[in-house]
Amino acid sequence: MAIEARLHASLREAGMRDVPERFTVARAHQELPLECLRGIDALIRAFDRVTTRRAWQEAVTRSAPAIAHRERHETCFFSAWDFHVPPGRTDGPQLIELNDNGSGFLFAALVNARYYELGGLGASPTVRAPEAYGAFADRVVRMLRSEVEAFHAGPPRGLTLVLDDAESVHRGRFRDELVLLRDLCRGAGLSSEIAVPEDLSWDAPRLLCRGEPVASVVNRSTDFYWEDAAFGALRAAYDHGSVYVAPNPFTYATRSSKHLLELLSSPERDAELGIEREERAILGAHIPETRVLRPENLDELLRQKDDLFFKPSHGFASHGLLTGREVGGARLRRLLRKSEPYVVQRRVPKSRLETEDGAALWIDVRVWAHRGDRFLVSGRASRDPDRLDLSPPGGWLPTYACA
Image 1 (cartoon, rainbow, N blue to C red):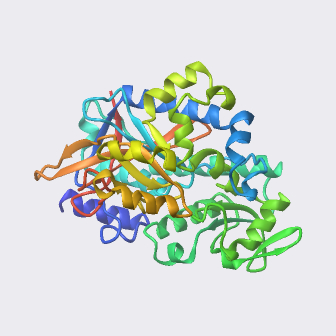
Image 2 (tube, rainbow, N blue to C red):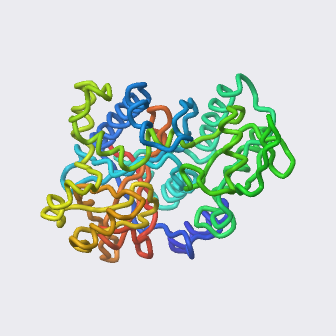
């Protein structure tokens, strides 16, 4: 049986039922030099120091919705940083965005481990073996347990809920990852269920899911400020402060909203935001110029548009992304009139990868970290140099550190 068929069978057996019909894995792998990973690690540590400072948090939450104003101390254990590594520049990975609820971490760990085993990469003197999936799963549970027990000052009494919208739970590309996470929690002795916001009710001082008390919520929803009416019970519990929820509106407003990259990429407000000189050097080396689209910079951005990307500040999964070739003055003015702000980012080219059968793919790097420590690397290979087209021969890309 060819490696591709064996890999698909192995992943399906592990719980990834939609491989390869709805979740594709590229027919290649990616090797990341240590100098690239050192740059990524330095950026993540600096990012965490900056975004957890009171000066930063007070400044960036002033313009956020009221629900994001109150300081919260939960930290998401599956935050994902997305990087492009420009061709020939392994020392200069560029941060494109942070996703505090980055899907794919369990899938990526499985893909890395199974591809390494089946593809014979153990014979390579340079490719470093990935963590075995069982050990990785244990690490995920330890991270989650440390977060919820710190919040509750002891073991949680109630459900650990994996929460997402109904479409994602029943038909989403990562629906099986929700099941894997729930089962990991159960295997570690935590009472756990998958739920949608409509399953929740607020019976002060308790959050209930179908009548059962909830202690902790692993939030996978992309309604970042819980604006839909279905989130009423979760909003009440969050305001009461009795339930661990991560990510949440405060972490979104202080870490992962795309407009924050404007502040991180420019030294203009460093003194106000508490960004130190050494941190500025790291941020400047690894975050491309990013600006919020405003009436006063529209003409300047139009002149530079061929080198820019335009994307909604609160978007996800490339929804709403526009290349400079797709916009003109009229379209940018329409974007300005929309209620959702757009950010404009300097284009960073992706590295190119050629598969064994000669297909050209453009690759990115996705890194998961918790409290400043990287614990997983992955990647995606796209048929389009500018957009995320993961149809075959592209897909999620097995990724490994190399000496």
